[in-house]
Image (cartoon, rainbow, N blue to C red; front, top):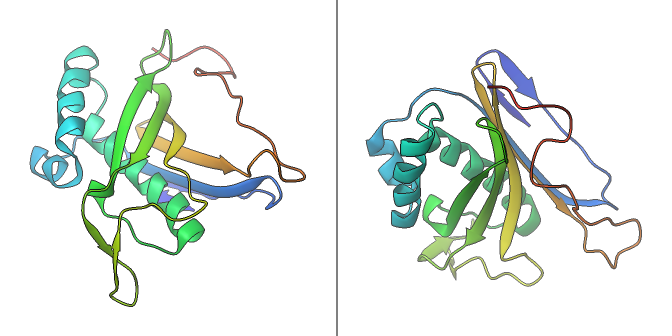
Length: 176
């Protein structure tokens, strides 16, 4: 579930097919660099600077925030464990021939202590059965940016599927 000014969305999936879903929507407006520094790892900040030079119309800091929100919304119900912004390294790709859509990979990194609800330290996201990374998609349209992750059930489980979605839009041309 997600919401922002003028937008609401919810998704669902069959438990036999989907292990986790995370979505987020944000207004596509700039985020202060001070805020970016709080949510982004050093490598992410470097990638944001590089991407901003190539596609300055994309507010990469806000896109990073949204992707990390989608990661959290997928991760927490799966594991019952919290994450900090520093526990996830997100890298974006722009779909071929597009400027407003693409994919991202969110890799979990051992950045320090995370505390569970009982206050017990838990080092890193290495929980048995949890993936080491998530793959997601992003889209910017009509002043909104949206990110989504669908974590399929492992292929060996009945009714499961694998994510074979190509890297790029499948429902028509990109907007310019």
